[in-house]
Amino acid sequence: MLYFKDLGVRCVIIILCINMKKYLLISVKFLVSFLLIWVLFDQIDLGIAFDRAKAAKFWPLLFVLLVFVVQIAIGGGRWGFVLNAIGAPLKFFDTVKLFYIGGFFNQVLPSSVGGDAVRIFMSYKRGLSLSKAINGVMIERIVTLAGLAVLCTLVLPGFIPKLDPITKQWVILIFPTLVFGLVVGIVFLSLLNRLPSSFEKFKIFRGLTYLASDTRSIFFNPKSLSAAIGLGVLTHVCISTYVFGLGVSLDLELTWLDCLILIPPVMLITTMPISIAGWGVRETAMVIAMSTIGVPDDAALVLSILFGFSAIVFTLPAALLWILNRSQAGKVSLDEIERTIKTSSTLGTRLHE
Image (tube, rainbow, N blue to C red; front, side, top):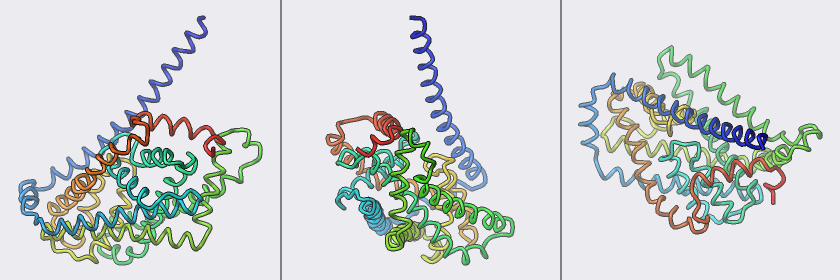
């Protein structure tokens, strides 16, 4: 009896430690976002920035909204392409809708349960095996990052000469490292099925063989790879165009080509998981990037903040879609989604059922 009581106490302690780790990570991200934004606010005339924000023109924002709609359609299409390539097709309308819902949760959730987890769970509820649902979202994210890396590679020759010597050294050091890490990660995922046969007794490693197979379906197939990367590049061209539209609204002196050169590196830096939804990191990177073409720091800060808030506003209707679609997901909570994915992702062969 004492043994079971002791075991129960240990289980409670383990659960508490896991939750503490989760909330500690979120707290650190909040702290990073707060500190970076505070430093910017301390160095910038907030009065001028506020006046600039109030003077924003409305009509260019309609163009920005149109670009956002196109971007969501491309994103949903990219995810659908990946799902088709790994043998788990969903209708285009479904992938776009779920991608849009996922975008909403990516914007508003500070926790580890983001839009990706929601996409995984809701596509699973639409009939995909959990392995395909997880792999499809994971690979789609990698494809998007690969597209960003390709676009950054194309625009860096025009970006680097604009930088001061110190920033230039950092970019030359960090960018190849990130690209190398991405390539190594893709190769690693593709070779997970080459693990020694002795590992097959562990269910989680048997599940990883499915991920390796699905990864190769995209990245080891030239036709699929070129199409997927092309969609990834197109996404970030849309983001650059989105920022250009916001710049027009703020009456900033920047061209579409400026945005195409400057924004991809900014977005690449923003993907680092060290802040809440990129807040703080994006603003700092935007101020540095825009300073290379003479955009005032206060204007660049307003541009980045408007980028973040407009994305939240444009994804708000997805909250209604989420509520309407919860009936298909069994009216589950976000905590239940997280538990389901974490539990099921350790079941190896059961993922493929």
